[in-house]
Length: 117
Image (cartoon, rainbow, N blue to C red; front, side, top):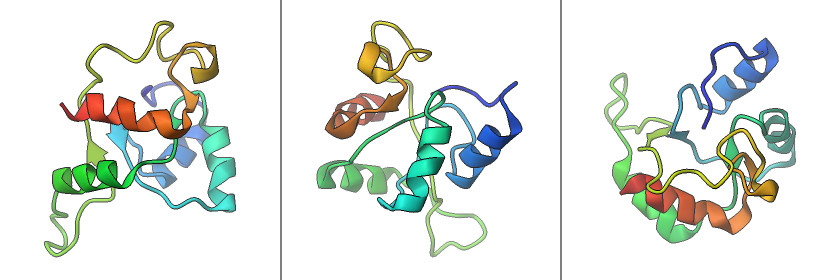
């Protein structure tokens, strides 16, 4: 959601490890306890939740081939900005306060569908 210019080096490193290097990048990660800390550390710069199987299929169709190994796909997805915007208060406010950043739960599916259009 937010860019990586002028952010703390630790947060930038966390975003790099999550394969989120630019604005509107999406990546799928497994639900593991060791990744929860990384998500919490970068919570002001990203939004996350549980993706539905239909959404995962739609994202896999959009996956780009890896130029280094044509048999594999890139570990991230380039998305458009969401139609209708991120929310009433924008990207600098948490989702719980009518903003866009932080944990969304199942509502992440609606946001990514708007970004795939």
